[in-house]
Length: 196
Image (cartoon, rainbow, N blue to C red; front, side, top):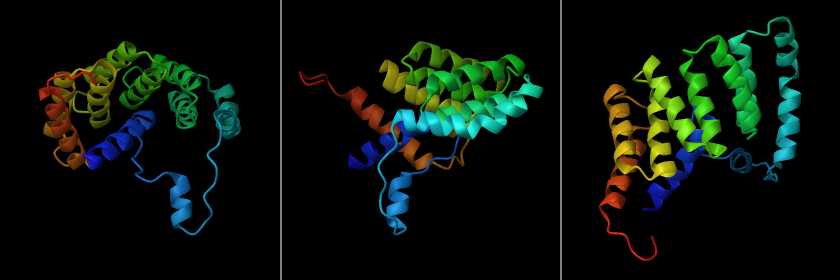
């Protein structure tokens, strides 16, 4: 059970990163295990300042090429990685106006929407993403997680994850997805108690 809870924690972090690779160890822990002293986590305001600084050269390029979907997507990703979800979403939306078939950007937009509390909007974006690429692993993974965590839709979550494993048999986190499916099935089979 503890392993499943740890996996869910890691996977919830995956939503924030959309289709970026999963790192199972936070940077502070990586530094500590490498012999460096652990550092205090930056505040959201600190992270916003870091993001603003990091996107400066991208914004300069965007001035001369305002419809560059790749640049818009890169800027969105910087803001998403620093938990500036509203700002990130605005750049993903602009990128999707230029290239509506960009499944990665749409999946990342859905992650931002989920973290802003728009569960239905996030699901709609993920379903739209699947119309362009019905086998996209990141989209199917996030759809399952958002259906489960945002809607308590066990059947919808399992369906998305089953498709993920069917279409992507070599998915790097296959074992974790299988554990999630088992956990959701076990939870869905329990009778509600007063503490639920």
